[in-house]
Every structure is written in structure tokens, then in C-alpha cells.
Image (cartoon, rainbow, N blue to C red; front, side, top):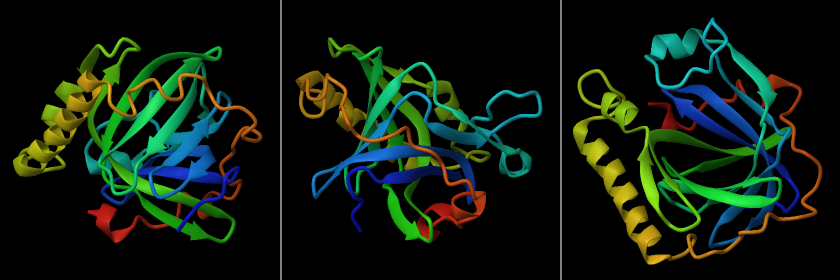
Length: 218
């Protein structure tokens, strides 16, 4: 399945079969090498929230299931997202006022694409552990404490899966330190003329109620 340039897609993150975050994005390009998405300031962004109004991140599944989903807008930065096919990560370029500030390598399950009446998108599961990379290629791990709490007897994954996730991050570190694609200076300037600010479908049933793919529901 291919998406068309200019098309709006919904990028959904799951945990245990529940949508934890949904992001409206504009397709810049889609080919055999990668999918490129644009998320400008003001784009629709939905996630689950605690009762006190703070965003829910990692939590036990019963808490996730009971937390309300609220739609807001992406603020402060514009983001270009690279989603390689079959990959266990995505790479984000952050821009502030048109200036590239840093990369963000998000470790996640390979995306599953879908298309339905009135909406289309791709689904994944966040693997918690991430990398933040400065323009000079200096890097650091992000959310290591949350990652350590996410596996073992009370976590989302067993230790074997956790080692595989960490190995995926280590492979990205090798590319970062070598200045290899996509950390080679490509797309330091944000795209232009990719259409209006993307919105989530008004009817939440088109994206929130759509079940998770079997491979991501566990």
C-alpha cells in the first residue's frame, strides 16, 4: 500500500490494543526506500490523559484503558518524520522557526499501514527508549529509566525483547557516529508547499475505534 503526496494520514501508537497517541501528518513522499511525513505546528494530535490533565505516558494497561483520549494541537516545533519500511525505528527532524534544531530517533515496532472509509494511516508500538541527536552528531539516550521499568515480570516485554530493542538503538548509534543517512545532513531545511495543516478525521470512529493490527494488539 502506498500513500499519495499531500495525503493526510493518521499515525497511531498502541499499547495492549489501546490507542495511546494519534498524530495527523501530511505525506511528503512515499517510495520503496521510505515514507516521509510532515507534522507542522498546529497539526491535530490526540493522546490519553490523566485525570489531573497531564499526558499519560507509560502506565499499566488498566490505567491506559480508562484514561480519556483528548485532541489538542502540536505546538512549538515543526517535525519531519522518516519511516523506513520494515524498520524498528523512525527518525524525526525538529525545526523551530524554520531552523533545524535536532534529530530524534524513536525506537518502535515496524509500522503497519491501513486504509478505510474516510481515513488512512499507519500503526506502531512505541518501544520507550529513544535517542536525541544534536546537529554536531553528539547524542544521548532518552527515557532509559522508563525503558528499564517497561520489561521484566511487570513490564510490557521480556528481557529478550528488551535486548533486541536496545540492539536496534545501538545500530542507530553506529550510523549516527558515522554520519550516515539519515544523519548526513539531508533535509536540514524543512519542506515547503506540502498542503494545509493536517487534521484528524472529525469522526473519531474512523481512527480511534479502528482495532489494532493483530501484530500490535498483544
